[in-house]
Length: 113
Length: 112
Image 1 (cartoon, one colour):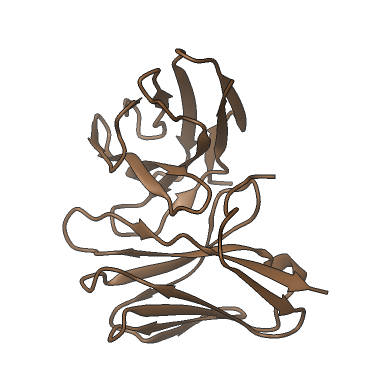
Image 2 (cartoon, rainbow over the protein chains, first blue to last red):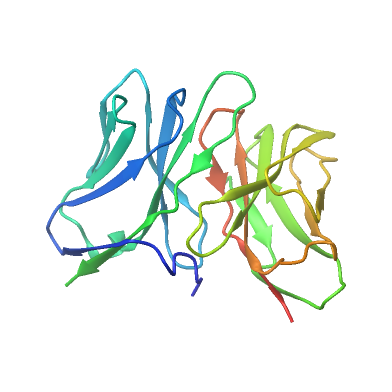
């Protein structure tokens, strides 16, 4: 498999428990945020996004929380399943002008049976 | 089904060779991007293109070149000037800048 994430922080969670993955973003002007999931040897998959006019957004089994005061983003996964095992990383951008995404380094989630 | 396709999945390059990585999308997206991914680091932007026949350098463009002759295609050439090319290369597209990306499945390039 792909060697991405050799030195990443790892979160180990028991199957069925909830997972919380955190991300500190760098630019106070960022107004759009995305969480991606990347399985070994594959490209990242979009999970959920949030704009800065919101502080919470829910999807299917996932919730993203945004705290602009401390520039913190979190991804909550409910009832974690073995298929959730992957590297998760956040991305931030500004939606005005010529944008660029800034990607976090990621957290490896291991689901224990 | 619409998507973004990268090929090949694995590529081996000898010292001093140029190699080209393919990226094709049928999503009708205007913007396309190339990123490099190394262990323990976030994705780093190599080149991006917001429209056909136009592209801009990203943060680590040295040793790379691109073209955007068609909306669907954004090939990346890794030249011999790139001194440390071994990495996982990801192509992405978006409907327009500031929207989320759709990523390809990546090309693993190894120098032998």
